[in-house]
Length: 257
Image 1 (cartoon, rainbow, N blue to C red):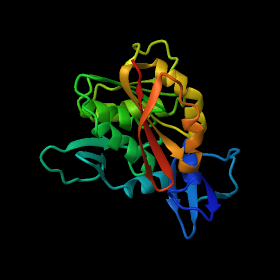
Image 2 (spheres, helix red, strand yellow; image 1 turned 90 degrees about the vertical axis):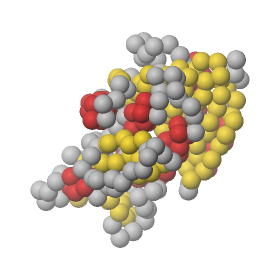
Image 3 (cartoon, rainbow, N blue to C red; image 1 turned 180 degrees about the horizontal axis):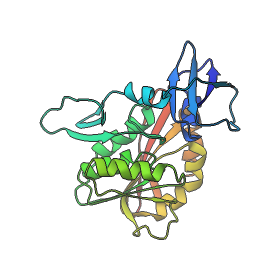
Image 4 (cartoon, helix red, strand yellow; image 1 turned 180 degrees about the vertical axis):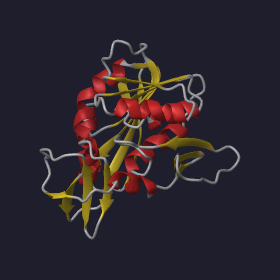
């Protein structure tokens, strides 16, 4: 097991989010630094130092420390933890494996909150950059008729499928992106937790996958880069809501008729 240490940043920093995107297996905060676990050394676009760790299951230790997350009536809970629920709660049992998306990060929480504000009954939902599958599974548990997730990282797809099986969810996952030919046409809702530069590139493709009146929620946007996304919004989309949590932004848009 290898560890990559980045000094002077915390677990909610952009560097931490980037390490998840780069495939780290787990991440912890230690005395003014973050330590990300990888199975082997690799080139990373961050300033830091590699360390060789003794043989311990650091990923299991990290996952054992995760607790449940509540977003409205939605509760995201690790499968190894007991959780208290009340009448009307919707529980998603989740193990992250090597994928990003446990509900603990601000961007994931904002995306979940966006889904809980919608009436998903009978709707179709597409999660772009699905990771653990959390958003698609949550959408299905919140009443969506069909929920799909796509991701360009092949390692995430079996993780998402296993999480769907664990929740008896019909959400389906595939390797690919918005241009995947097996996706069933257009959707009522598209949600994507990626990053600002990629959202700016994908906005026309998001619009093409939305039904008229359909809703788009994009997050993973550093607030200082929000303008980059807003400047790229095509004529088919209208921004109807925005919110911030810490240094992160979520935008909601509607597909014009």
